[in-house]
Length: 136
Image 1 (tube, rainbow, N blue to C red):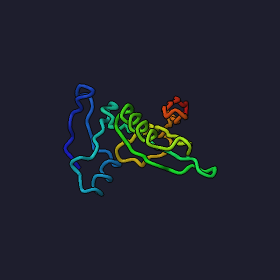
Image 2: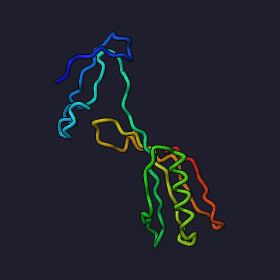
Image 3: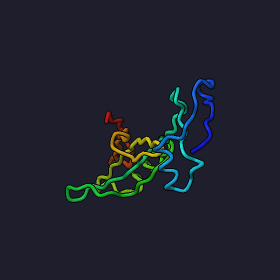
């Protein structure tokens, strides 16, 4: 696969190898040179990507309909985008939104274990957006 390389994260005590999961994904995408390398000795530098998804819902006839939504790498940016989207909505339609924190790992499929709803937002009658932290 590749030439063994001394790991710099553990001061050369371990050797880096290309993981099978990373190699299979990289070959499928035609990017063998960017496949993930893991050290046999230490955890090394874990390649994780954090994303914050924001979604707006409008309650109509007892059901929630999905409205504007988006994704950002920053929590503050997602909160700003959600705030702007909620302010454009009609308060009579009772819009609400949420911010979801999601962690992506190279070569894996996203699942519910890597997803957490961290904020719920509502629009009050005065047009102000109220954020509430959730424990989910």
